Length: 97
Length: 505
Image 1 (tube, helix red, strand yellow):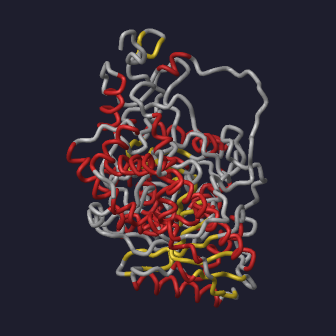
Image 2: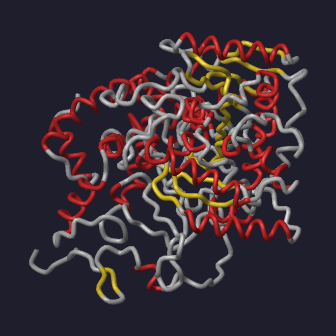
Image 3: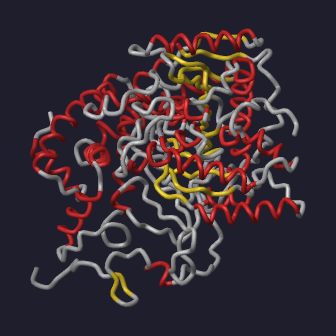
């Protein structure tokens, strides 16, 4: 059973701000979905390897060739907070914090 | 003008196959085709909520250029044919100075978090269809980040089904399917992660194909679940879908999962028929809860193929009932990782808070809708410490079993026949309160994504006045076989000319 505390913990891991009402609904919905996916526990997979992808490709490499990069103004055009030629970000590491 | 298969239909409702002949004969122009689509969009688009962005003047200018090119001898396969792109495909909207290109369209993925996003580059879909001469009309509505089976999860409102405007068109490519069904575009591209092309094609009475994983480039497709997502066409005939697939398929070095195998001529084998083919009917696909009218139509379609000379074989895919659970672990797990990029810093919505963590929480809390949040939560939970092996690794192991069952059965039969969706179009609002009930819409389509195989939905009649789809599933990269079976059925069954009520006037 997933509890309210579990939902809050997972929301924090996912960096997802949820309202009280959303947390409440999520507890019920996640429990019913997890109950449904619980059928997987009945499958004997003791001799079965995992499949992450289905195509017969691995280690796709390309030649290391220099190519023109996206112009700076184009790359910055969708940035929500721009400071001159830079992306403005909230402080990540701050002394004394 | 040469006689066409359905001369009574308005121009907007004809197939690509028909209008290409008319273009070649000089009976219609690309401008004519573009105008009838734009007229239909003007008449029905807002009510059905099919398009999120339309480029009218720019599309007409492209059509004029296509007509000039044709006059000069240009014979590219889709020259002058107007189409729509699901708004999950980026379309270049910025020039090299970062200024908006006239006629450039935003890309939203049906989400508030990308509202107003203008892509600085063109995706493979826009590039390849442009190179084939097709004319982009606009971007179609879809479930947010392609997560949904009814198009009700779009942040920009639900789409209405032109067959019955109180019902959903299916999803997540619901704007694309409704636009093609309703004569607002001659074809559209969608994406299919668990059925998002085939199920809306089925509910909207058109043809929709999910190619083999790796067959079509995903470059420029907003990612949902990277090991399951695939791009494919929606059209009004199997031939149309084959034509469009030929234009978009092929290796692309910008997508490391696109496979470098030659693209066959999909039209060359289209009319080879089904005489002597062995077609399997997996008994597990006639699931409990399937509508009797759907089962009846699909069983009759199988009889039609038997009558055409195919040998029908009862087969078993015993892990089918584990598909839903497998999908709803793997899909959300991959989604939770892919959607981490929406951080309120690099692009898209930002809460603008000075505190890093607060900015993440507020931006993502405000920007994502309920279904996207649910899947991020489910995926994050399945990947979190203590649950990773029980859920994520377990689902990947069951994926191995599901794929092995398909591979084994498909060595014995040439392809599989199944329903596309257990139901016809349902009422808007009927399933929104119950996520699990909604997820069951894809029970017959999502195992195909888990195994990475090609699948098509082709109309196989009406139940209670609404379209039903027959699904044909094939071996990896055996799209020619899938298309050939669908085309044989379509030609024999005569449902290809069915159009929704909106088409008559």
